[in-house]
Amino acid sequence: MTGDRVDRAPSAVLIGFMGAGKSTVGRILADRLGVDFIDTDTEIVRTTGRSIPDIFTTDGPQRFREIECDVVLGVLRTHRGVIALGGGAVMTPAIESALAGHRVIYLRIDADAGFARVADSDRPLIVGDDPQTRYADLLAERDATYTRAAVFTVDAAAGDAGTVADEILTELAHALVGERVGERAVNS
Ligand code: S3P
Image (cartoon, rainbow, N blue to C red):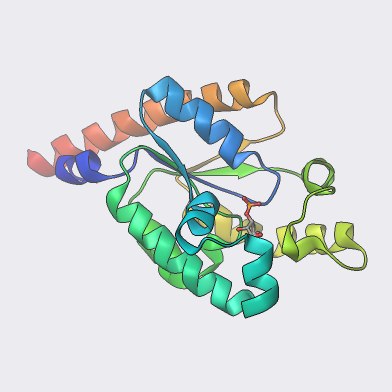
């Protein structure tokens, strides 16, 4: 990223599967960086005035992805703090493309730990028969995309949310040094 782009970009964009802790870690990270935090699922609920399960059930998953795409692209353009994306957002090609060049961090969670965190939630993609297998299958399907879209990956189950946020801060510091080195090489 050039210096100009860095100044206008979000501080960090957290991606990963349901239950990875993107929102909890994102809030702590934003606090430690002294910037604002935004969760795109919350933004979808705020702008539509509807719940995510309602959009999925009434309008269908495709419509949800369209709404999500509009919201995420808008937030990427305007938000300067930490952003947590909904777990499926990166699977939309326009969103994956828009993430290129941003400080994208993949919070990786294994299927057992992740499912235990969301088993009692109302997430529309894991309702129905055998939600645990559905969770594990979807995670396996998406892992390569999350990895490809990210600048680095952290183990989301390695400690509490504060520990994960600290790990991200350390990695971000390295990434920032890399950006400055790249900038100097471009400008020299
Ligand atoms: C989804 C993840 C959810 C939410 C929606 C779809 C997904 O967000 O956007 O239920 O496709 O993985 P979280 O990752 O915040 O749970």
